[in-house]
Image 1: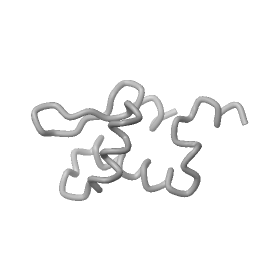
Image 2 (image 1 turned 180 degrees about the horizontal axis):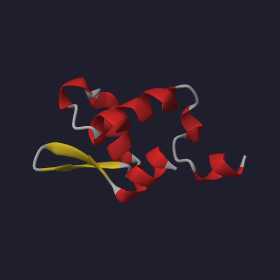
Image 3 (image 1 turned 45 degrees about the vertical axis):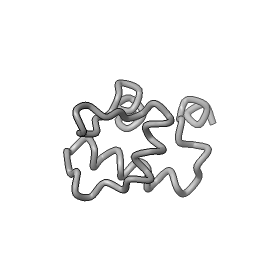
Image 4 (image 1 turned 135 degrees about the vertical axis):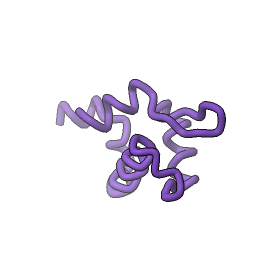
Length: 67
């Protein structure tokens, strides 16, 4: 339960799995696999950002993915 309070993806239920895979694709620089809708949602949550047209995980995104 405590982990759910700190997890910004907890509210998305099963969609959180897809969002986490998108985050892994971003981290691995697999840009051809990235779902744009998921990326837009991650950007809105502050978990990812665009730099010169390339998606990157924010520090919060990295912590969310690897914790």
